[in-house]
Length: 173
Image 1: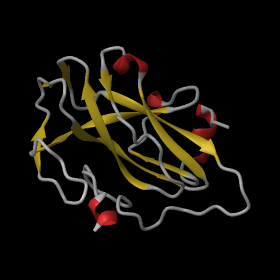
Image 2 (image 1 turned 90 degrees about the vertical axis):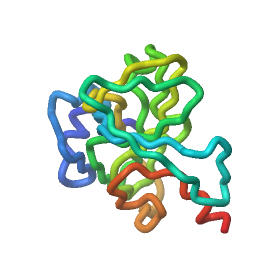
Image 3 (image 1 turned 45 degrees about the horizontal axis):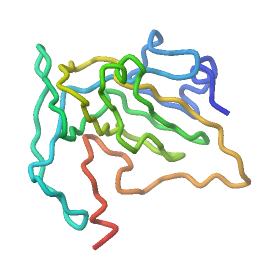
Image 4 (image 1 turned 135 degrees about the vertical axis):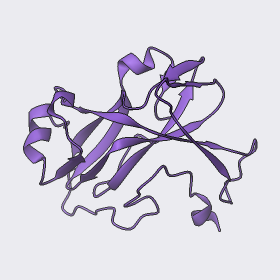
């Protein structure tokens, strides 16, 4: 079952933390998260799963920045979230998707217990100008069933403070 907007609000400060929280971003069954000004791109043309690939950082200026097709941009949300006893998930907003911007290529699923900023894997179908602070995606919450809830407490992306490039190499080394 997906939580309604009223249930999300009811669980704030208990099972759900969204910081900063702005009530106007609360939807009937989700909450809109905003795009931070920091972006990251991989420097190498060929990426290697078994190593930490080099990255370049950039900031989105006030006048926006154009994302080019066929390039993966990593970004993060302004909001830091923490979730207990619920499964957090993010999806791109339909208004963003209708402009041909995929906000998360594959990683919209969060773990019970996740705490941190959401890293967005953004990919543009055609050139698109984006702006920091735009409501880029929405977070929603599923109830979880089972006798024992196992929480994500010490994973490689837990308690992050920045954009997180792939750390798959830690599993493969």
